[in-house]
Length: 271
Length: 298
Image (cartoon, rainbow over all chains, first blue to last red; front, side, top):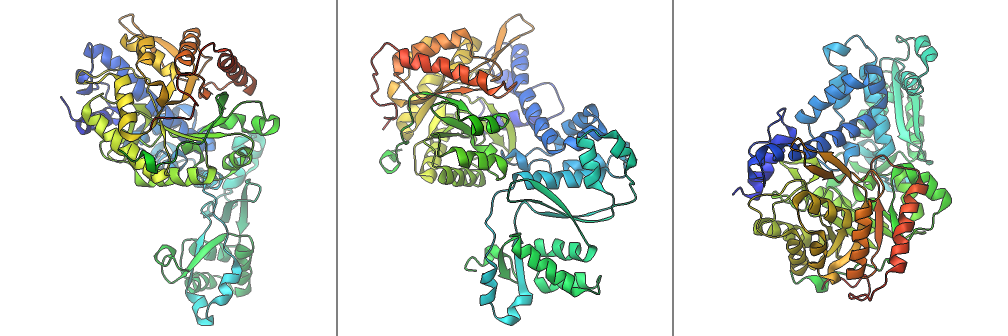
């Protein structure tokens, strides 16, 4: 008689393995093992169809570009190799887009990697938890020399991406199945930075940013100290006031939800 | 567990017919505010934010809510996922639902979420694992939960406890209630040759805090046998409606939910199913042996 842990280990192996035989689980079931095999396959089918559907929902444009059959085949391999670690399936599949885009078969689709990254950022913007913005007035209580050491925490729906093509135009045209627009897009244009976020009406917004603002925002939202974010971006621009204006915009638009001084926020809950 | 005294009883929810709120119906429900007794949502669909969560926040003032978890994995030998439990606790704290429920099943092993409600062997070892986890959940949520009977396609040769006794004992040891899914009783009874009526008769009426109804599919196996699949993809079958009426006679009126998760129909179809349940609830011709529907096991 298997222990509960032994049974669950064996079932885990069967559900995720690239094999049809549910051994030894079928032998632990009532009835003929051949019948048990068919019955156990119902569970295996549900596991795969549920996870496949989660990936389809997160990457609808990628699926249209590469074709449903190819997408589903890659997804089947991905599900076996990188099953979810949480039942919150909106978080499942961050690496899947890259897996599709990095295959030799899709290498000719130069825009696919950016499209997949953009699509995951949109997914994140749609589903990330609500977190209240910080009150900028809290910053006024800081000593002036502390300002440069500020590390901000961004709203979880926000992503900043450096793109090598007009991925947001491609994304929209693909989802709208607009062949004319697709043909008109210059894939060599659109190099630059975008900010993807959820607005107050819960709609996803994609905004273009200048390169210095993009670099600064990427570092700032990743938790880098303010002086490091400004300095790194400043090397790219002769107009530091642009960065100050962008920082003010991030604060005014509620993109920052907390801060600490030179170390991660969670280590200093008092702030 | 003897902790019942420290755990709040579930808030009252009307013994009427409710519907499972799914994404395709958000807009229609928000706009038309259909006359259903309550709404039930899958907890994991609302762990995040965005429009889905906003719809729910808007509707919670209009309808009693039931939060139904599908991913906590009460039967995992490896223990509960603390992060998942924390997300559930945050949702329950925010929504203050009338009912919270989970499943008698498992879905997590080796840290991986296996996206189905997988069957447990009905053993003393499994019972102890599930009891430990139900206690953990109830203590974290500071409230009683209901545990739903599963639909299963296999039985294990080493199972030693009938499913209905397993659930009754779970309620005794932990103070939890039961979410009695009549479709699951029918599906499992058909698949394993059990007597569905005897299943219901073996359950203490006082532990049943909610009833689920749903459609199922039928698959013919290579040996010619028929396997019923709990796919929530069609109307409630005639046999399940009949069993439901028997359940009402035995348990008395209970909040009853229509679940529909695949091939989701227009909202009107779902509400029409709920109306059938409402008629059965109103027409039941029997005494309520359990008293108030929320007077659960203590």
